[in-house]
Image 1 (cartoon, rainbow, N blue to C red):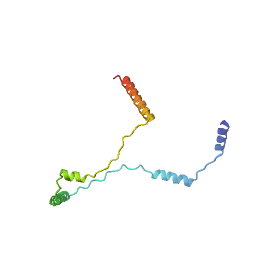
Image 2 (cartoon, rainbow, N blue to C red; image 1 turned 135 degrees about the vertical axis):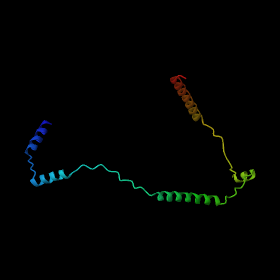
Image 3 (spheres, one colour; image 1 turned 45 degrees about the horizontal axis):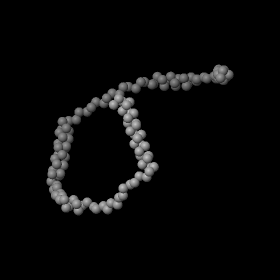
Image 4 (cartoon, one colour; image 1 turned 90 degrees about the vertical axis):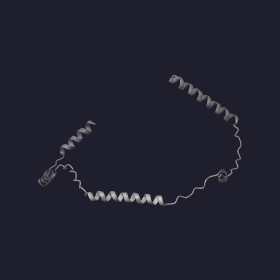
Length: 131
């Protein structure tokens, strides 16, 4: 690593850079023309005339009244009063063909083992929290 660092230093010493007067003047001019951004000045809020406020309020009230009138003038549909006969007739009859599931021996043993593990874990948790 030392050889590499020494070689890089020697190469860097051999580099000669000159800046022309024209480029130097352009850089200086650019730096002089840069000014910090002015803080954003909030635009003055224009005051609306009182007539605008009244017009918008009246428009809102008129729209609300129109909606209320339209909703209230519609005739509600008469719902049919449900009777037990109608309810029973509406429920479809399902023909259930179900059989009780019988657990095979190994499944029953696995279920018993899982229930035993759950009881042991519950007991351990109760002992840990002091119940």
